[in-house]
Length: 130
Image 1 (spheres, rainbow, N blue to C red):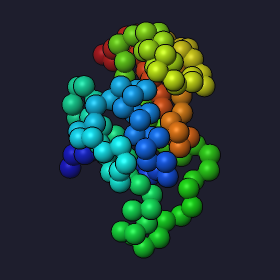
Image 2: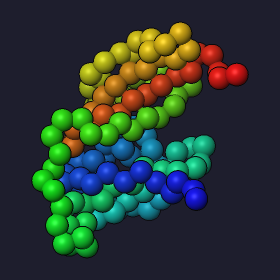
Image 3: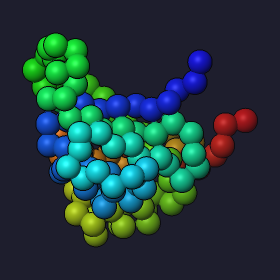
């Protein structure tokens, strides 16, 4: 079994699409700002982050619970230089809610939210796992 993607069900598809593409700088597999689906693949390859319009998924499944309240997910993106990355994404409109700050003696993290309130963590490993 292989992880293909983490999919976030969103109500503001266009806003989230622009956030992951324009603010975080992730590359969409194809242009689909109006949805109802898009996948963003990180530079290093592997599993990606996908967005799916909540209304479309409700049509597929017949029903969805209301949009969740409180933090329900955390998208984690590894970066080489957290200070530079935070400066770059702040210049593109992101507002950090925490950090950059040490998480452990091995990494520094910063947190921000996408337009739907999903938490995004940027992490820089200071010491690689051995």
